[in-house]
Image (cartoon, rainbow, N blue to C red; front, side, top):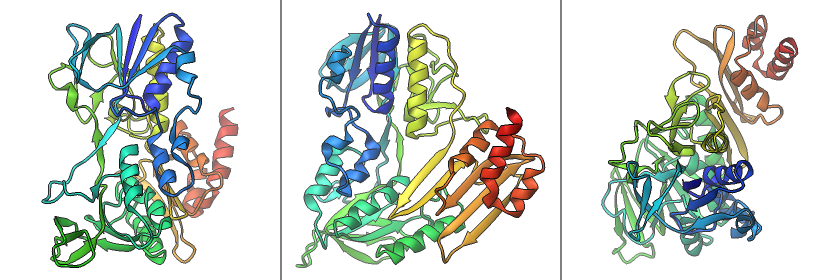
Length: 418
């Protein structure tokens, strides 16, 4: 059996290792389009913050790990999938045959369509190559204009500030991490950043980027949609990500927001599977098909895909929206349907002075979503209540009265279920 895996991130490597456990005789090839040693993308903020070196980003530290498992890591970029011929076509012109194919190419940065986006000094922050370029340019006093304050934008703030950058963040919507936090929580995170020396500029974005020809010492001039101009040594474009699936055009694979898969991570075409940020699978809370692009989901989807590629028959229980964010030391989390739903009920507890926030959202007597800031103890209990869809009974009213009792509610429902 010949298995080909496109993508050498957490999903791709997890699947390769699982396949080797299940099929000692199989041929396993992982195609790495970036040409790097397989690494964890979510480790890049720690590299920027000087908490690890580049080796610390590697998914497996032992250089003999992959050869010992007879997993072939090939530095090659896939440009097309020919499902009729069961081959993948590489950028160098080769065509590799497969019996089972896993697409685990992850996400790629969205691109701003503005003048000057290709100028030197303009960067994204998604790959190791991006991180190297930023580290080569940043030093105390470096003026950084960052467009975007979503998940990626917020997790790199500490790394930039720890290196002495003067940071201006442009927030088009006016709300930091607006896709994972309610308005009050977003406001508190922005206030925290401001108190720690970050300039947060809401309701604006870059209109164009130009070389600075004014005779000043800045490399770039960033003109905002408000008309204001900011000098910058580095412009960071972190406006979101999308599934890395452009190479699948014409493949016949069903794609909506991502690659549509069933509970066994199969696509609509025989022998082809998908896992990770590219996979649109069932959400365990809503039951809807959607992308929940986080590493725990990617790893579990990859494990399930590998079992089924090796001839097993195991279903994925469904993904869960989970966001855990550390912004300059302020830890925030959101789980499930954190925004609630029509006809539901919820409670919001706010302590702005202490930077503590807690929101719980219910459908009938089931917790369907939660958001927290400043809470770290037992926070996994919120995930547990949501994922198990535990009926809270009288505990719902107690939580509406005091949402901090979520751990007690979790223990009570777990004991009842046992």
